[in-house]
Length: 382
Image (tube, rainbow, N blue to C red; front, side):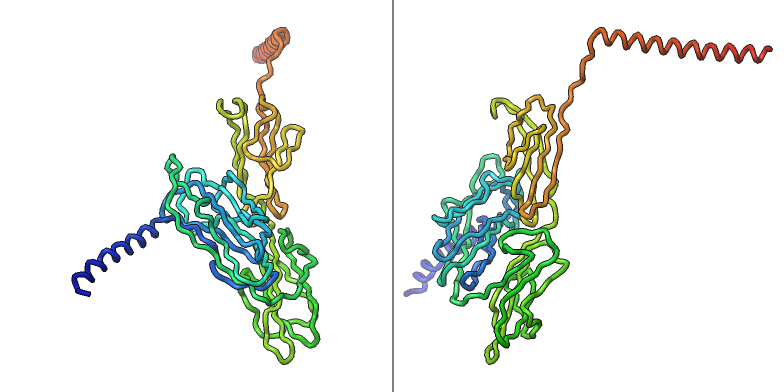
């Protein structure tokens, strides 16, 4: 091939390559974190959906994920720590179809750098490969330009391997359900001992941490005190005589002792919405376990699992309204509207009586003062 032909072929390819690189760099990125990992059969693990807006101001994120139902099951989806503050569609999953969906937003828009969208807890079911991937037509990010313009998107999926090893059962008397959030500062775990086996363990925020090879207990139970908020993993290592040390079990604990952030609320009215009735908009965020539900108390009535916007039953707005948010650990925070009180009009005859009484009192006070002055003068000349 001649030098001229090589140049003719090479230059367009270089230009095309640069075009692909720069167009990808300008695209926002939706990713699964971690992206590649190995787990044991029956193990639970967390993945995060994350977004990098690539210096674009965005206000809406819509995500559809697909996962293999034969090898993975969804345990829970949490919004704790998400940069999204309003949810048009709460994170949800359809187990039979292996689909996860959500739509969330940021009022006013924002740049996002590696921001967490949601955290998903999976449990492995059978050995083999498992891919958690974005449904590209069903996933989009909208710019905060007033037009709902879609930004260019690139996707990073997660590919996982499930091996044949099976962990031993680790129980907890203080946290019996490892998929539930608790308000406790003490964590106790226990497991069945094997004859002459040695055990080493660690409690860590990282599920990948490996205990050292120094035997720490032979009684099959451990208690941790002064536990802080967050997600932690008890990781157990075992050595049977004549064999190498190996990780044989994990147990997760999830703790949240903090209330959600203050509730943001507004009562408003719009002729084109709800037949012009007054309605309440409310929202808050819990950075650890995520918001579980809202309750509204309007007057003497309690409405559980309320959703925003909430149309007021009392359109006069005289009733006190309490909005209460609960996180997944049961912590709560409230906001109270005292109610709108109109001035009470007095009957006309009562108004006349009151005016007459006030005039009479003022007259009496005037004569008392005048009388005292007269006495003082008489004393001076007497």
